[in-house]
Image (cartoon, rainbow, N blue to C red; front, side, top):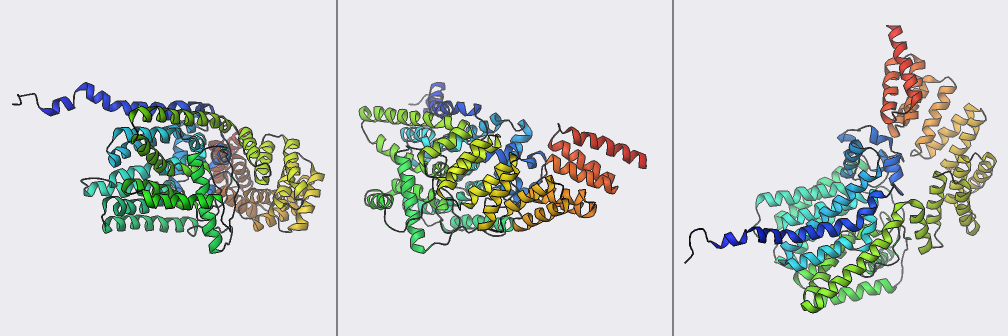
Length: 592
């Protein structure tokens, strides 16, 4: 007979049992944090420079309306249009910037915290799906340490990958309930909506829940599928309003056969990286396939084996890998380079399959096998992480992997030029031109480097070659406008800047210089309108200061004061704007 105060629940909630239940979480936090701690000392690389370090938009909160109705690059130092609609990504950047400024450590810390949270959610979801702690721990450790995760965790700009994966898993956690309620369904759909606002790849949630119901639970939950479809439709409508289309840029027109074979080949590429994460790189080449290759054969063989052997939750885990890759395999609509970060979500399904296989072994075999696999993953991860410390080792490693890649040489040249290492930058560009003298991008970039190095004769010579191939090269028209400005030919400079902007409306610098030429030639009204548009696209401190100067010359001192103040908000150390602000305030007081 059970005595009072001696019920079975008492033992279940004892301190020892509670502590043992927390051990996996503590272990997973350590596994997810310790290998990546060096990333907190890393700097900004690649897109981080334009998105954070040189981004004037971060100093000026654009408002939720503009954030949710703009693509990522419109609100960056690039000020160019793109297909990347990720408002939560922009919100996160603004939050971190206003909390800690443009310090790399703050942004890297956010990435690390997201990775830790995702690892813990992988464990929590694993317990819900597999009902076994050992499978959850093995899968979560393998996920946390997978070497391909060096990119999404170490690269600040990959935060959208971490964000959408985390919220997609949270949504699945609420969806996969033994005793669901209305609120769990609401939370599932809300999490899905947030995941979509992190990155469009979260649309994978829809096929994942349908496959869960059909393959695992054998249910047809039409209402919930309809709710997920409604969330997706609302997102797509918002995306169309923000971008002017679902994916406005079409890079390549491919036959249906090439699309299918290329997609299968890309799946094979990713599966190989999951199984053997070797020769990782920040940049992979884009390859279109029109015939069978080894990667396609690998996919077909694995698909046949999976259809033969896998059922229920294991089949769903295998399908998870493919579904997680679907958004990046739309090769006909928007060509996105292959990237390690694309495996962040799919690697969860892979980790589950491995964990189930290892857990089925005897303890005597499973423990050393798990340990060996974790150690190998850790070694490969630790080897890959350091290249993400800085652009030069990052791109040089990529060039070692693909020595014939012109795109990687362009990246190296751009970074070297950014560091004022002009001769070294031109060397990489000349390497491209030695093989392909008509490579327009290499020629245009070379002219840009020569302009930065003030090699004006070189600019003229290189742009002459560009114009022979492409008379409508906006970048070279901009370069030639700059030369006219240097030589004092302001009217001619203005015309060339105007032509450059007309040819490429994303070239905001051309618009800015056009406004400056209009101001210097006395066309103050035109200059004000042009500079207002330039500042809207790229609100740098010098641009705002120039606009304020035009306002002051026109006698509009209130607008001048506002522009100078905004310039100082963007760059508090800009002494010229401070001097102009003091003068404008004094002039305004005199007028009164």
